[in-house]
Image (tube, rainbow, N blue to C red; front, side, top):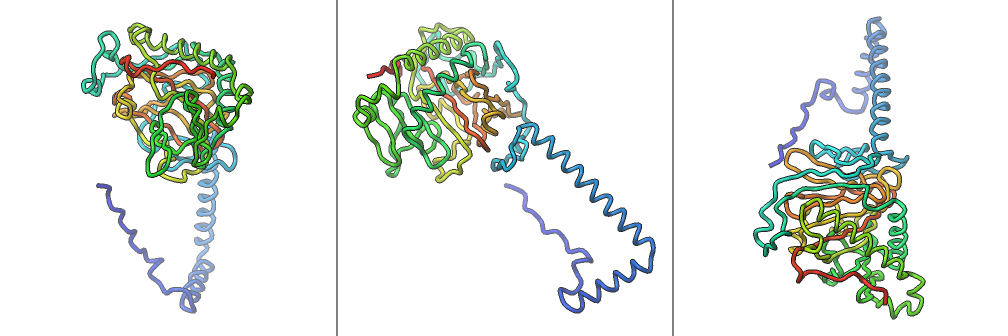
Length: 365
């Protein structure tokens, strides 16, 4: 239970008469005492000096906080996050700075019991758990090409609540008449490249029938070939780090592009920043990866990926081409900070050890 805030006691200065003649007499007599006592002038000057110093110090602190996240003028901080992007919910450590260029950084953590309630697959189900970050699998140029794919797809639909998603596979469900993106828990713009389902506002159209032959102007075979190549390289890195065979991993749904900005949430479904566990949300998930397509503090503020451990938070600052990967159980409870300015792009690619949950790469019709 949160402690109750006690009311501050009323001091002598607040116990006098309210506005009116009595208040003016009180102010006048106080002014007279200061005029009669020269020490009052020195006291007043000292107070003004202290106030000036405090104001100057505040500006310095603000400047330093701003510099930590390069917040532009007019930037609005996230709820519960001060101007400088430092969370108020505990100690924070940075696992990967945007300015770092990491061959690989890996932190092993004890596995949770989440995997015990699912069928185990020898040589694949996590026995070694943890989270890793690498800038050596996907190049910045490849990330920029994939971002252009995301931008083209996302331009076909949209969401009013600050989050949009292009799903490469069918992963949505109905809730009270709305299409809900189950992974982010957000009302989203959805594009399923298998069925061609595209959400336009609150309605669905078939992308291929809607655009007809013009679909070739939106996506190309080269787009899908790039995605397949990137997915394979991420899969191989995950297998290498966790000591399993790459062939034991199966691409699983959902795999999707996401676009986040500072637009306020219209409903609770738009609130993507809440903590969650992938294995709990999707039982098929065993390994999760994110490929970032834009740069923290350059393209957007906020939006860091946060692992929420018992002792502290561990953050990953996105940069184009950076891959963050981790086992999907409760040992990697996480959330995404609210984006405060700019636009954050990423693609989530997940893997299962269960071949029954495996899906094939998308193909352009």
